[in-house]
Structure formats: C-alpha cells, structure tokens
Length: 64
Figure (cartoon, one colour):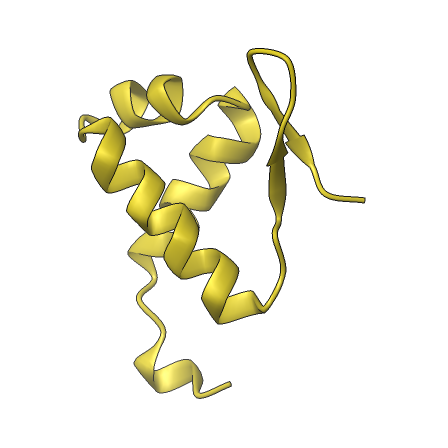
C-alpha cells in the first residue's frame, strides 16, 4: 500500500462509520450525503482489502 496516495479523509469517514454503525447516521454526522459515505466505505474496503463492516439488522457491525 502506498501511503502517499492514501486519502486521509477516508479515515475520517471510517471512524464515523465505526462510531455510528450506520451509513446514514455517519453521513449526517459528517455533513455529507449517504451515497458519498457509502462510496467512501467501498473505497476503504478496496484499499484495506477487507469488508470492514457488514450489514446487520438496521445497523452495521464489524466484520469478524
């Protein structure tokens, strides 16, 4: 992984997603749209080669 090309804003979004466990709530917290937060999650998943979060019943949880 080339850290020079890493978009550090993705870490802010990932942190909000981990705190809120819900894409819409994280997006609201960050003042962004739900589709933008979802796209950032997809970029994080690709970057880290991990699902990171998976859908649960009305919430998201860490992929164990």
